[in-house]
Length: 270
Image (cartoon, rainbow, N blue to C red; front, side, top):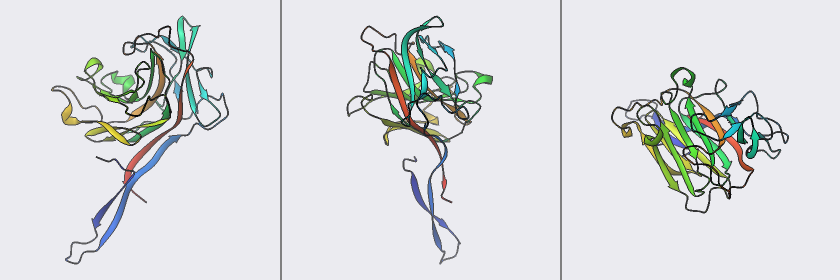
């Protein structure tokens, strides 16, 4: 398990009795990032992100996801804000935003992390997640899904991370509900991350491991579909099967702020 940003190993430089040893430093090296710097109201960088526009997405979500700055834009202070609003739009009672890196950036294995301030309220469903890049060809769940962070706004101290794939999706997903011990998750920024290796995926919040799935943990007949590139998604849903609808106590608008998203690979320091 790789849980640190650097690791030292000894490599043998010769096989003689008096072999020399040289320290080789392995570490997480940054390969992709977005720091969301720019003026207030600017849309996310089109060279890094594309919009999903529409509604439902197979989860009975109630919002219509738009490409308007009212729903998804920079805040001028180094954050992306995804704003769920209660308003009539294109036949839906709510609006929000959903972006992804499909066709722009995808990667197999590594450390995927984001620093996020979460919204709150019944029926609010923010997520930082990934889908297999072959999604358009093989569809879900055959492409695989890695949920780095999911959260039900009515349970503000519960974090959920997990995977969906053939034989382990929906209600049978391999996931874990982690009860955060230090207050509610909407009260301050947190770093949510996975470290994805060839035969395992490990979940972290603020550097603390709370879940791990290995290839051998899959149920009989299920397939490990985590051996190809995945792309990144960020969104705030309103309603849906998993969270249910908002109620009269849900306050709108609700905003998820993303300070940064970063992707690392593990290798020897150059």
